[in-house]
Each structure stands twice: as structure tokens, then as C-alpha cells.
Amino acid sequence: MSIEASLTYQKKFFNDFTDAWHKKSRYRLYQGLDATAENLRLDIEETPGYILAYDKNAQAELHDFLQIGLIDFLRQHIPFFEVNDQGTVYFGNWYHRREFGHINVILRAITQSADEQRRILPQLEAFSDDPDHYLDRQLDAMRKEVYRDVDSLHTQIDNLEAENAPERGQASQGNSGFRGLLKNFIDPSDDDQASPSQPSGDASRLKAQFDKEKLTADDIFDKRKRELEVSAAITRYEFQAVMGTYSSVAEFENILANLKDDFMQSLKLEGGRTHA
Image (tube, rainbow, N blue to C red):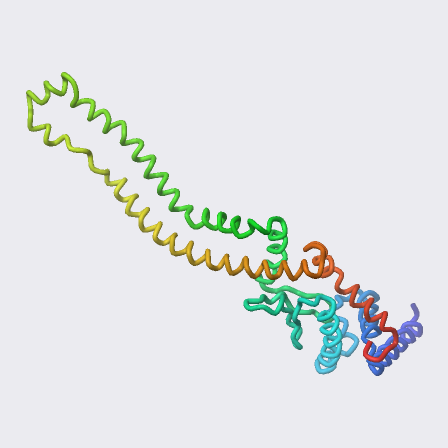
């Protein structure tokens, strides 16, 4: 492309973008952003700065205008989402509702920056696999984790007691029958010392540690159990909201994946209307 052709292209582009702004056509503004990103091989989020000469105030004004349109669309497109005027997306309107993410105006998507937000969809998938046993599976997994050290100590105690059992049995057998009678005849005082053996030092130490670890594990389990019960209840509300609108969690995820295309199609269908 020659210099003259390049300048002509840029002049036409900026005239079109200016006209789109004057007519408040969101569809044409987004077209301008997409075309700039593609032609200049820029990241789409860098294009507003390039087009507006990196003027922060101008970029903020464009962002705020485009955000209004995306928020309005999202509120209608996914009815169980609540979106505040700052673009924060909440899942539902019930108590303990979760923050799902935040809209990215230029990407035309919902971004999730927190771990709690990114856990929502996998939890919905797991819940949809077996709603009746979702909580039970979580409690079982948590119980194994919390009591892992306690179970290990219990196994050690059992093994130690099993090792000591033959010794006690042999001592008991040694005091029975003719050999026992002969021993008692020679030294009757030994009979008094043949009382049941006391736990070894290792066994006592392990049992004391076991009791301590179990008390701690019980406290942790009770606390986490309550947290899991609340979390499962919230996931159930979310699942019911999804199933009340879509045929499956997979369909809901597909809606999220195609949010940009659906939004642009919606703007396009509005045609040349003001604010489209």
C-alpha cells in the first residue's frame, strides 16, 4: 500500500469512527475496534488507546458508553445474572449469592479473576452429574483429607499392639501347665509380678498423639462440614437457576462462550438505530 493509499485508508477509518461516535452506534464502534486489531495485529484491548491517541479521558468515555450497552444486553440475555452499573456480575439474587465475574467491555466477555469465581462452573458440572450425592461426595473427600494423620496414627497403634500380642501370649503360656507349677513352686513371688503388661512407651506416646490429633481433626471437620453444606446449597440454587433457563449446564457454558458473537448479532439486528 502506498503512502497516499495508507493515508486515505486512515482518513476514511477515522471519519467512519467519528461518524459512529456521533450517531452512538455501538455496532460500528466495535467494528472499528475489531478492524484495527486485525489490520494492525494489535491486542483488541490495545485498540482504543491507539485510535484515541492514548488519551485516558477519551478512552474512559468510550469504555463507559460501550459498557452501558453490554450491561443492558447481559441482563436480558442471561436473566438470572444480576449486573450492577460497574459491570460486576452476580449469580442470582438470593442470600449468599456469589460474584461470577466482571464484564470486559472490549473483549465482550465475562472475566473471572478470583479462584472462587473460577470454581463456579466446575462445581455446577459436578453437581449436574449427581445432584443427590453431590454433598456426600464432597464430605467423604474432605473427611479423608482431615483425618489422614489421625488414621495413620490409628494404624500405627494397631500395628504396635499386634506386634506386642505374641509376646503377651507367650508370657501367659509360660505360666501354665507343669512348667508353670514348677516355677511357682520354686519362686512363688514371681506370681505377683505376672500382672498384665502395661502399654509400652511408644504405644502410650502414639495414643496421646492420636487423642490430640483427633480433637483437632474433629474441630476442623465440623467447621468445614458447615462450609461445604452452605456451598452445596448455593450451588443447588445456581443449578436450579441454570436448569430453569437452559436444558443443561453445558448449554449455559455454550452461551457464555458465544457471548461476544451473540452480543454483536444483537447490535447488528438493531441496525442503524441510535445507540445500537
